[in-house]
Length: 261
Image (tube, rainbow, N blue to C red; front, side, top):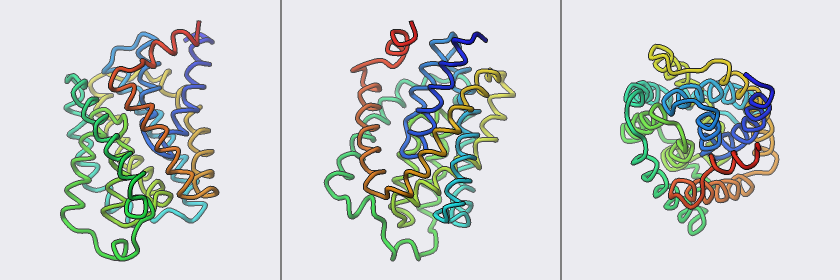
């Protein structure tokens, strides 16, 4: 691996860790860069999981230190997510993800609408919902979100945030803390599936993770310090950029090619 590749992966990791911790969709950057560096799409998808696991470990630790992580509720929600993620990773080994990218683009725009039009309902949480025990509908939803997370991960943070806020009543900051712990719990299982199928480039994954850890720690501290309003606008910006990429309005891979020349 060249010095040029190492620098590119670390800087990409910084942005990916920051975006994924506060919102989601950062994997568009890492997947595009990994493929631009010559990895086939399935191998890029598997390699990206290394950085995902490590950045979420860093973010979970930071949120826990700041006393905003309800780890007991997160672990309960993680159980169906783990089963779903394994199924999704198995599917991802040899399936084309283009249709899923279009679907997530549409869902992101819907989420953007509800965040801007009815913020009290969708981003600030509800104590009465938070105090209720988890029901089977919420657990089923987390199983299916887990399938998508295991399949490609790109943008899955939006699904987790929506499910956590609406299903458990937490605000966006605490929902983000739960989100990163859930992803951390199922990441090793998806890594194993890709490893068994020889779809991980370990050196690229570890270097990408170095930058991701820094980005994740910075993002988790900013989320707690600046609050729900800050997280909301980060999500809005990232949704717009991600949806534009998914609908073909611009291409991160082409952007990286010009930046790295």
